Image (cartoon, rainbow, N blue to C red; front, side, top):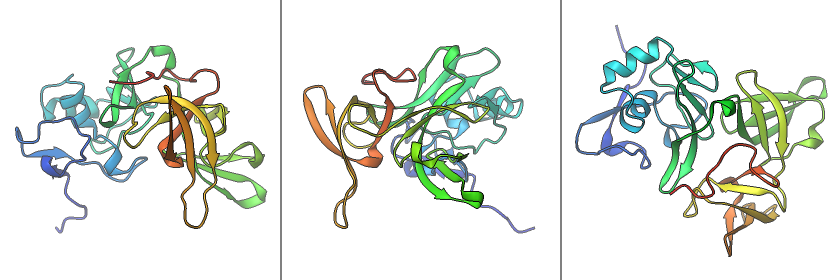
Length: 244
């Protein structure tokens, strides 16, 4: 029979640049497939378990653990070895085991950061789309592929962050992208820093929407999609001020 899907592997030299794996030790890594995060900004479960967290020694051990449902992402057992794991995802190993949140680190778009078990039921999701659907309801789409139907769309704007209860997929709070909020830098040279948002520009025909953010004593201007609001007076989830 003819093959119905693409390759399940990719050469390590061609893996996303943030993958913290030896490039010449082995030839291939597992690739991700269509899911909540793009391939360029997410880890596959095997690479995460074997090479990053080092909780298994081989691909075979990782596959066995995954097929048994020993790895949960946002409270849901993920049985596919190709499920993309990206920004703000909560990864739990086993039942009552270690819990990690995928956060930007120095030089890494996402990396696992250990968190307490009482935080595993919530995550921040950035609003990336907003549209009107049937019966006048508003549909919000977030950076991790979630969608929400809300009655009052005026409470939400593009760039805002939703505090979501997982796996119930329920909005618990919203952090607006506005002056005075705290923002986490998720792209660019300031990756991983948390600072105070000083101004938000809507952009124009020739300029992208941007955010002025104060990081330490330095105020920098970043594209709006490089900043994720995480709280007002303090982050709503545990985030290192700068992950070194």
